[in-house]
Image (cartoon, rainbow, N blue to C red):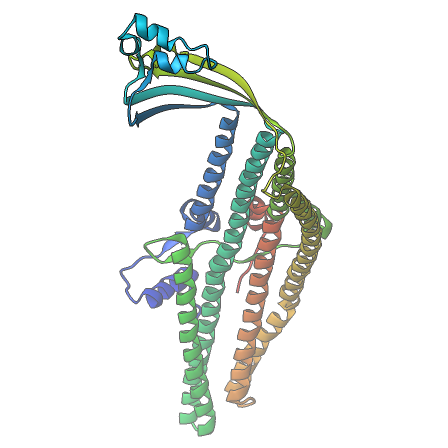
Length: 468
């Protein structure tokens, strides 16, 4: 007697969690994929990296703005700054000094005419602005580099999504595969249990030897061990899927294995991959960054032109402060004569980086073409294997029926019946494995070609459900 599918799931869950009260969470592949997109920490980290790159790109727009700052200074002098008549007259040519005459006419002139320019304590405050108006193209280059880094971060996120899609496919359909293998082992166990019961009755009636009954018993015990091992395999696969989806209850897939009658032409997958694969776009973004570095280093050969201005916000009640201007503006030019940053070598290094990216892209295109062709052929090989074993399955089922009938008539041994049961289980397992490999190859093809959203179409609208 075969266990019905819903009963099998209940049995599997009970075996897995060792607690009948715990219910499994039925989840479709599409729902599982949406869960991964929203709950994956790896994808969240990549999205944060995109936000960081975007904020850094926005920051480069401030390079066009003037640099405005407010400054304040406090200075303590050893003595006040003063100007006396002797200081002024002392600067006159020798022989022309009027000091003796003034001294005779005004005995206290030196003291009375001395002026204090500043106190010993000086406090100044001003607002300053420097506005670059020509930098040799370095601002535009910096913005291009930041844009390239943002694009690189975005495509890294897409690549991470593709990797997660492949991981989910392996985990999800790995559970489906082990569940159906477990069903196969249960069928074998039940078939051999029925055969053992039959052998025991025939031994009691003297129709078969004891060794035949022992053979049937040993085969049944081995089938029970194989079924237990399959249950453990299902438990391991289910735990991995549950952790991936971050569920509190064991995840039980509701989407079954499937196959398709055929695949689109291989060239369609190759062309789509070479056009949309994010890894190639990452290399393009790196090339843009390297080109920006070239422009930055070339810009160091050009003069810098800038506007500047200063406005005093506070002045002391001193003669120097009163005579000093309140504001000043001007134009400045900075012409590099000898540069110690190694701009010439950096320009050559940036050119080498561009060349390197070009070669890496060419190699990546070649590798992607090989990967797509290899995966495409593996998918077709799995389809051929699955379809080719259909006749073997029919033969194995008929062989089991005939061997059981022959054994009951004394025309076949117990070993013949066991071999027939094991051959049938082997054919079923091989077909399931072929279907699983097909789904994995298909998911890889859709991931590298950027067609992950069409997986549902292959499964629901064009898919052929794999049955025992």
